[in-house]
Length: 162
Image: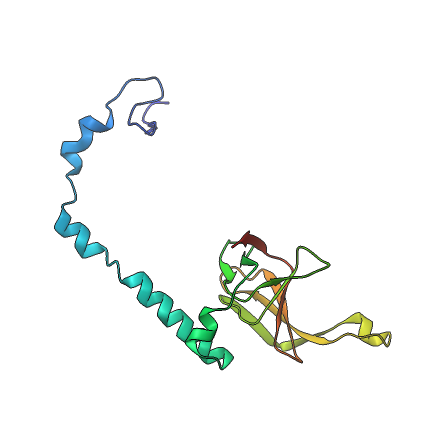
């Protein structure tokens, strides 16, 4: 189509004509070592990890060292937008392989104004009451939070085995 701007990854047009990346290098310029060092701090990842562990430790009433030793069966993401909703302390359910429970969640909203009751409770069986938990980014329901022990029960997530 006339006026369309379609190029292959190597800079050629679909019919094979056009310039390659090497022809465009002069126009793009290059990023020198000084500019690269201004944009990258190798210590920042370690600092971010330390701050995240500190935040989790405060939430759980644990030391940073204890939180650092917590392990997870999988990192969990929202199926609607792929935002991470649980990175640490996730444990896969022994019977329902697509469900997880965790002490911590992130990027979620706990709907404390909405209490959900397990239907088994009304039948006289063991059950419980829960808050609905949704993704903070897209609003997709991803879990419930147990009112009794504050555990998150993730049921609508995408696991990424850690």
